Length: 459
Image (tube, rainbow, N blue to C red; front, top):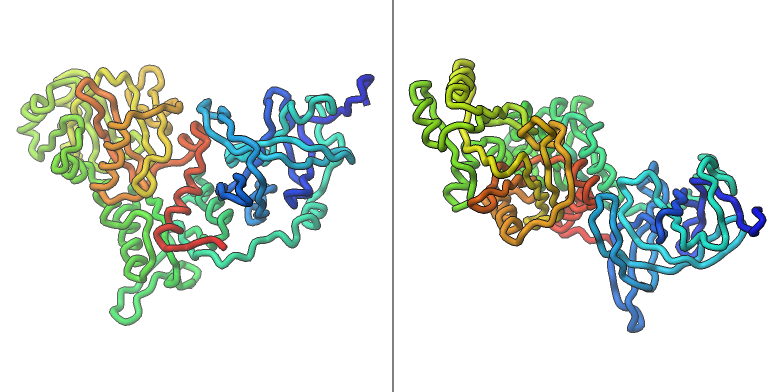
C-alpha cells in the first residue's frame, strides 16, 4: 500500500467479473484511457421490462476462442469512443461488479471488438481512481494464474453449439486473413476446416461425385466454402469451388464470379456495359497497334497491367510514350496479356479500398503510396487510414460488386476530376490492413453473411 492507501498494480493484471460469469480475464492497465472496455461479440440490443438491455458474448481468453460466455445487462449509456484506427464508433456501456485484490466495486465499461488487441480487457482510469496506482514495470502484482488454474475456471464453458461445417479453401493457413477467418468461425461455434487447395482432389461422377483431401478424408458434407485463392491457383481452385457447389455447398464467392474478377479485361468490359466509371482502358494483341493503343487512352503517362495481376504486382507506370512502347512491347514479346490504362495523376498515389460484404460497404480505408511509389497497395508499403466515403462512392462500390456477383469483395476506387472511378475488384481481399485501421470485425461479418444465407440462427 502507498501512503495514500492506494494499492500498487502492474501494467497487466487479472480481473474477475462475477455478475458476468467471468472468473478471470487478463486486463491491460491503461491510465491513459478514461473508460474500461471488454471484448464482446454478437452484441444485440433488446427491450426488457420496458428498459434497454444488451445481450452479448464474452470471449475471455484469446488463445481459447471456443470459450464463449453469454450475458445480458441493462444499457447505461451509448458513447462515442475512438478506436485504435482513430475513428469514432458507438459503443454500449454497462455497469457491473469488478473483483480485484479481494475487493468488489462497480465499474462502467464499454462492449468493444478487441480482436486486434493483445488483451480482452482494458482497465481505464475511472475504474482505478482512488483505489490503485500503476507500476508500469510490474505485471500481475496482485495475483497470477497458470494454465491449470484457467482450465479449472472455464472447463464447463466450452460451447457445444451444433454449428455449420465450413471449409476455408486457401494455401497458407498462417496468413493473417486466413487465421482471422478461422478464429471468427470458431468464435461463432462453427466447425471450420482449413483446406489447402493444392492437397484437394476430386472425382466427377454422375452418381457419386467427391472432393477428397490428401489424407483420404471425403469432403462431401460441407455447408459452405470460403475461397481465398492466390492467382496461381485460380484455375484449379475455381474447379474445386464448382465441385463443392455441385455437392450443394454454398460458396462465399462462386467460381464464375472469381474468374470474372481475376480477368481484368473481362471485368472492365462488364463495368463498361453497366455504366460503371473506370479509367479509360485499352487492349490490343498485335505490337503493330501499340502507338494507337497509347493514343487511345490519352497518351503517357499511363499504366500497364497484366490481366491477372494482384496486390500491385504486374503493374507498371510508363511516364513517357517511348517508355510505354518499350514496356508494352516487352510484355508482348513474353506473350503476356496486358491492359493499358489511363493514369489518374490528380489522385496523388491514393485510392480507397471499400470492403463489401453481402452487398453492403462494411468498412473503408484510404491507401496512400509510399514516397516514390505510385501503387498504394498495403503489400507494396502503402499506408492505410480511415476515411469517410461519399454516398456516390458507396453506391459505386456496391454496384461493382453486384455486377460481378461477389458477395465479398474489395472494391478499389480512385478519386478523379471526373468523379470516383473503379480501379479493380478483388475477390479475395486482405483483412489485415482494413481490420487494423478501422477496428471492424471483418472476419466475423463474413461468417455472419454465410449464416444469413444458410438461414442459421444461434440458439
